[in-house]
Image (cartoon, each protein chain N blue to C red):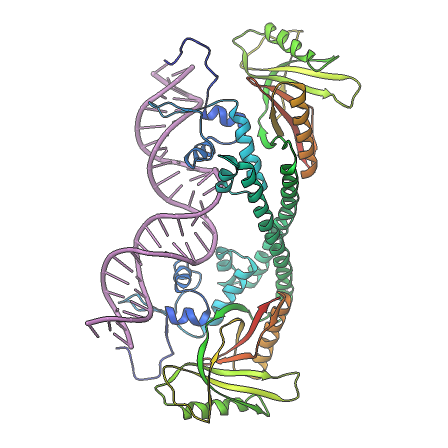
Length: 265
Length: 265
DNA sequence: ACGACCTTAACGGTGCGTTAAAGTTT
DNA sequence: CAAACTTTAACGCACCGTTAAGGTCG
């Protein structure tokens, strides 16, 4: 019985203190565990935690910062030790920019969700579009103007025929340097290559640059492709990206992948 | 050696397929594990996962929904099975309201952070304020008009003296029915009681109603209390709460807790 | 036979809520 | 003695990134 002689400061067990402070006992245990807010005394025998009334103010500071959205880790940095006030200012500034970002993201996201809902109401929902990063890849290519889109396929077949079969990689397709609104179509058939490839006048050897790509898949017919192009175009516009290079078409097995290189802004 | 007779659909191992799709192999494994997006074939011997090109479109749908902010669990609900389109609409609508909420929260939060930053620039930072819920509590009380704030303490002492000491609980304080801007001060000293208490004309027996309270702690002097009152007042205004009942003062050991009952709106 | 690829398993990060099993206080 | 309280321990949530240890493919 620790009921010593003089009047000892009132101690509260965890449940009592929790009720006073308006948090759960579990929360207090957790805060103790992570070193954010500790009991003033721990009975070494029973390991019971004991708190004092003065600590209510300390806990209130913690909870007020938490209410602003600061993480527990950062709250710990913001309250203890020397120069806590400077750190607190820095952490709140950081939190401010983070909150501004998430505000903008939420606003943008909301627009996109609304667009998606509109889209779902339509008869024929839009093709899904995804963003991905693509490393640079070595290719052999032939660039030329063509009279129609399909013509580039012939060029591609000729290109493949001109290459040693050991050197051709797994991806082939076309770049479109000028298309659609332009009166002339200028395309570039390409095939990825590996290792050393003999240089010839028939084709160029170059790198497709690394890029961030907005992509959609479609069947290899004009109607499907047109709606995929439209979907990607719309997608880019809605998110405020801008086109950053020639559009790419990748020939997959029985599918076409439409890729628009994009940059933010 | 599964190289059977006829031309089999091209199969891609997880790494290849991941590269094509622009995600990591780990992500594909995870999606498989949670049943969101599964390989078309799993070798029963080696457990290698194999994917087909057609699945790129399916994965794109998943990623597009994820990009909108839908959780993986909800994406699974949105794509598989019957009536997927209705569910998709419902889930997106739900996501929309959630996003609107978080948008409002971020906007409000930003204001509060700015206010906190302003506050930190000041000489004397504001007292922290916290929100908490309080259950109803039985009290004995004496309500009266007083000439000054301190007078209520005398009333409180008299009240305590009038009660059997076995019945008094652990909380005492005062309610302020009219104060500050009002020309007359009307307070109500109270002490929490337990079990049965003899009814007398000296005091009322009643319940402090359950409430949501905006609280601050201060020293029991007029200057400290004034700044705490001001802090809570300001806090309530900034968050768009409104006062919902008499203000409460709780007498703690060597501290005072200021509580304003509030309601949203 | 070596390197690149595949497998499962498990921890980490955020902030606690929620059992569960067992000891303590009143 | 029973009720109410305390303790530690552990899982759960969301979404994978990141080792780690050990088989498989070209």
